[in-house]
Length: 193
Image (cartoon, rainbow, N blue to C red; front, side, top):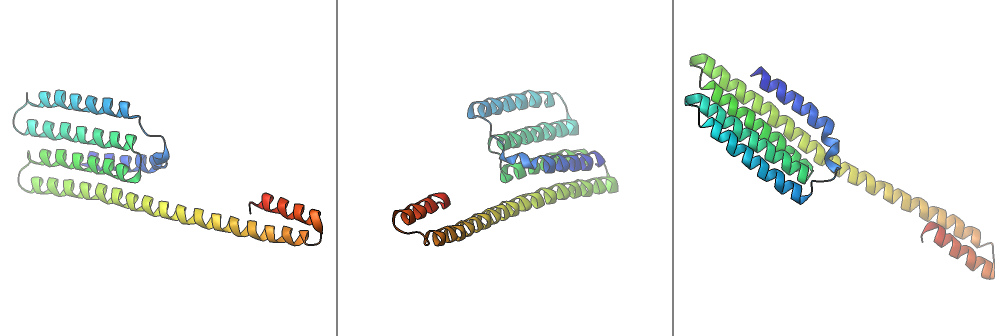
């Protein structure tokens, strides 16, 4: 169980450090489809290996290969469409996979040890899910804040440009005739009016 928690923490650190990569280019469609087929083929091969096992070892193997496939597909989707939602889905796929394997391993235990194992699996999943949700909400809030900040900067730039144009136009008022017209035309051109 400690391995799951350590893995979850290291994934959280990895994803938080690399979450800035969300704006990177996405995977081309042909590569996406090819990798999707590769994931399916790998799952089928791994599943066939699980069929050679019996009892709870087979159940653990099945949970492990299904989780591995779900993680790979979620990460592939993130690489194809890098955004906060697909990033979140990849983290949830990891949490679900870890939980499935952990609960299958608990089936080998009896009594209080089984109960503790189940609670630890639940707690690890809750921690991973909560961290993913917090990061997703933060990413959404960051996006809104960046948009508002960008809008505020654009508005400020417009206000400054209009104020500078008003000054230049007023300076042109001291001129007469063609000079004044040329001055105003240049001011409009310079300040984008």
